[in-house]
Image 1 (cartoon, helix red, strand yellow):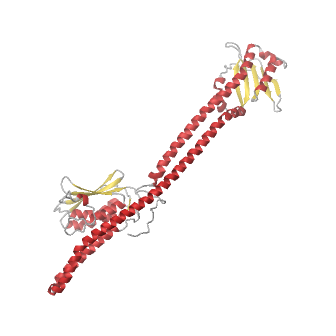
Image 2: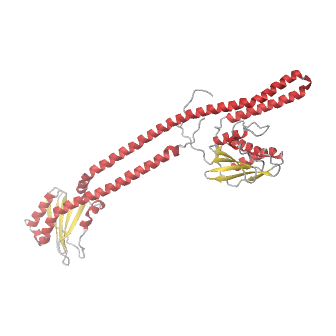
Image 3: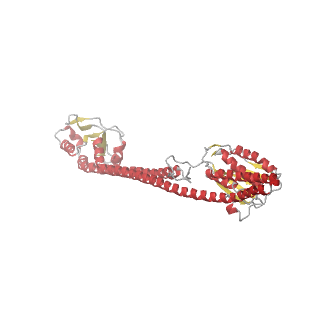
Length: 453
């Protein structure tokens, strides 16, 4: 299976979630701020229009002793107030009050104007300055009637106040008329912006799928090239054992008295061929087994246990440095154990004559590293670049597949293998594994290729 190192959360979800969040903040926050600012401005305009209409009447009431004339239904004050009801359709009542008396004219349910007396002001009534906050109160107060009050008496004299009561719903309707165009604009921008994000996301998904198909073609080409290279190396590597087999078969005809020795050599050559073919199969086998939570400490100890016979031949011990509390990442445990076992056996064959091979594990940024250190001859500078190439070996009896298989297994875990010489002597091979495997989206499928390798 062709895998991708990209995760859907990094590729699409996170960038577009950030973009959508930013869009909502700009559109929502900016739109709300603009809406409140325009609403406040529209409310001030409505209040200024009311003030302009009320100012002449309030001035006339303040210049005379208007409250004493309210008992006369034919007085100029009654005519002024009636005219005001005709000028301001949202006006519902007018109250004039002093400490001694009170007078009100309001619209009855029948639509006619009713004039009657009402309770006077209570002692200690403060002067009214509510008009300065009228635009704010229009939206903050819950009452159906919205009052605007004015003081008629000069400062220091007994208070006389006139209150104009308006239908709050009608005033809010006037404000809403001025807000209608802005609301439509905000809604339009929201719809257009949301549609743009959806279109951009659809384009990105299409581009990603197209890129994935192209990536599949390139990976197929790479696999073909790799298979060709490995096959060529295998043919070249098998040629010498096959020539030896042919020579030994002919030797049986020429020297039948040496049959036992020749058969023993044939058996060794056949075992060598079998080892090379087994290594080739391991190298080309798919490493798409199930990933499962794995006890790293137990896996390392198991690999060390299996490697003890190989370490015992040159008389080497194992120095295990694995801290407790290592996490349990999802791994292909059998394959990873084989890779670590291969690295430890390589350390046992490093030429170290005494002492111990150190196997350690450490947490690194976003992953875990497993290092195998020996005190042998080290790795020649010329061998380092080709150390993980298939069939490349510096050992007389090696097949050059061990570290190539290790690299294949670690790459299947989206990790990496590092090889270096220790300053104190010897070599260090480090397996670096991520703690979490990249998420592969279900819809992210490689383009299927019908040809075969």
